[in-house]
Image (cartoon, rainbow, N blue to C red):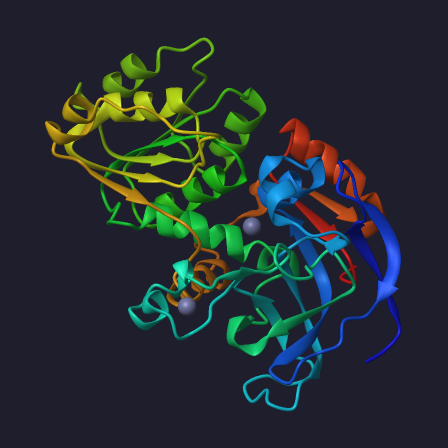
Length: 349
Ligand SMILES: [Zn+2]
Ligand SMILES: [Zn+2]
């Protein structure tokens, strides 16, 4: 397909982005061209938009950002076998090589030659995107397209929750951003017996309650440790899901994690964090998991089932659905933290 399309482009190496007309991408032999119905804004897009240190090092302008989407295949390259025109799709954003040590040992989410959609190549805040077949995911038609657009971050949440079983367990989620509140819904679906959530924003704590949190606390005014202990007969929680990247929250999580428990960490601290390893980790006999990306494609399989069965209803987490032209409103809300997931309606209206 040739012609022009609307796309949100970072034109220059500075803060901002512009909605402009640009060329529809040309599909490679192993790629499909997807017409985007919905795309949702990720923290990564915010980093690119505000042009933080990471973005300055990683992004080459002009660049189309965005990587969380749902859409329909409109064209396929000649080597594409598993997809055809009209398929309802999303994509795994970690484009793995398939031949490095990690890819060979079942860890393609941390492929050593990883390329990320919307970071290392043109993204989804556009009417069309070209996607390699190996990361395309066929959606069930029973999933609403706006829900389908948030499966990628939901996959992060799922792997954080399910590093070990949460069935019957008490869980403390530190950080109620979009992925934190999706994790709340998922932990509930997998049978967590108690969900306590902390965040510095009361607005976000409210969303956490709507997603199924039993207890919420704001460390600005609440004593997290005494609240968690009062709800767990003094024992502390079995599981901590660290979603904030805040050093304070990490220490707080470790303090209330019961000896023998486990912590999964998804939130990214800005820099090095110091831990008292002897007392906070080793003598407590705990397990800590670092989580990045999603298992390709077993995580997608589960996320898709959670959504099509409505075992997890993500609606409270999708706080904004905006026409593409109003992307700035959504980006401002993301920067201010006054939102859950922000979904842009590109062709899906
Ligand atoms: Zn994302
Ligand atoms: Zn690889």
